[in-house]
Amino acid sequence: MPGPLALERAARLFRALGDEARLSLLQRISEREACVTEMASATGEGVSTISQRLKLLRAEGLVKRRREGKHLYYSLVDGHIYNLIRNALEHSEEKH
Image (tube, rainbow, N blue to C red; front, side, top):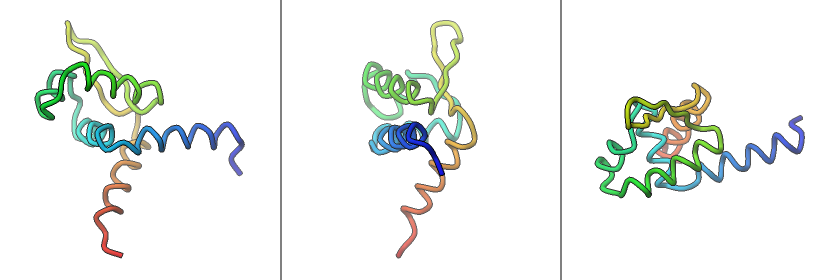
């Protein structure tokens, strides 16, 4: 049985995933690594808005980043996050 800290961490993870805009970013980078400017251009939102969302996702341990020149590229931390996103989206498309 998970302890209180694990439950708290899982709840924070689900809160981070619970925002449609953040989930959309995660889905986008689950397909391939992307830089902030690419994501901003693809979504039509500002770089600062995308950066703030990614900052929260990074703080929750869902994404990692790497620097290449002046660009920051984001990707999912691991396959667990990929599976969470994929399973959630597949489940949401099922008819019950």
